[in-house]
Length: 542
Figure 1 (cartoon, one colour):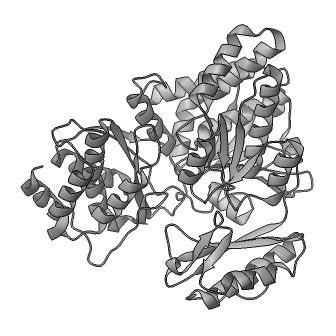
Figure 2 (cartoon, one colour):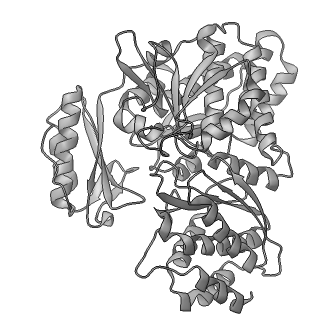
Figure 3 (spheres, rainbow, N blue to C red):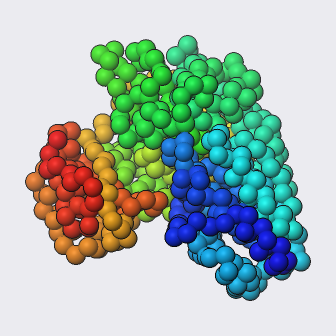
């Protein structure tokens, strides 16, 4: 390592005094003006990681569903996965170290991880459409080049597209071609093949309104549409031509506020969906004839996909181990429907896609979706081989079912939740089943629920267990929650610290919306009192 060059460049990307950041599930996130030094240092770290793994590593500059003035960065490991936990610790250490200790920390990481500093390194870089992203990407490049790494800057990409590029490059093109066009062709071809087998494609299955959160999803979906048209026509709203990124729109807004985004006109029973700012989340929704808004979140997406895959496996007679992975946020009705009606096993993991992804890898087919719409389906290599073999040897309807499964394998982005590929899978399933959005919604009725957040001085005072469904600290909080839950029918509640900011997130379910609202507010008040709440004190009821 040329330590003198690193020192020289590091002074050009100086760390603000007193700033401490934690690498979480979503990488680093903060106000954009605080991140220049982090980007430079993550360029350094990615280069070391590339040398250690002898693989291409990805760096994505995005803050996903955060406001436009924020930004962030996360690293992508060789098979398109989240960064390994031990390297998350290195990332946090490197981001927070003072200038005079940079050389020591880089040397320590290299020695601890047995990095061959003579090994070639290659980094691929993507960014979202935030005004700050291009300049911050340049800081990443400075970090890569000062350590002698090579790079390819893809420029504007969705986060899932960057994960796809990393996976393609590290599998020598076996997964797909590591280009934007390769991504479009792979996914669109599978979608078109699927919809050819549908006998129920009426007008209601051909057009979809998409709220793109004024983000990168609009740009990429517009580029991709010619590849899957005319099987599906997408009408883009909040496409970035006016309006701010994620402001009063996007999947997170729709899920949190349980109402449609601004800028979208909805006709009765018209299928609509929302992406988030970097297009790795999707939720669906519609208005019924009475004008009532219906949200179809990640729970119902997992239910649609899980039940459809189970039907196909039964048809071809293949006994594969299937599991649906949920978090504590999953609506209780979805869990009961999957387990009791569809007979699909359900497992609970900690919040965060890396926890869901890890659990899903334990199954032949692992289906994971967070309620916020972030998810995908993972097929093990063994399961994929069995399905492709069955598609060759079976005949008639069984062969057709196996071919549908083949195309679904190709259509899912198996590295991370991907709003575009998830959207195409959902549209294909609805077409193949001849199912309307109302029929999908009617699979089960959600238990009324409410999510709130409480600002605290230090989110680390909250610790949890049982996949975040029970609070261990502060002492006495869980006992208070248990007492409050007993006041309401069909109720449950839990609290968990945010992974990115000093807030505690509160979730409550009960037999009526009024009861869910009151329970959430009462639990929030308990958190405020016992966990060091700051600013506005929650009121005991709505």
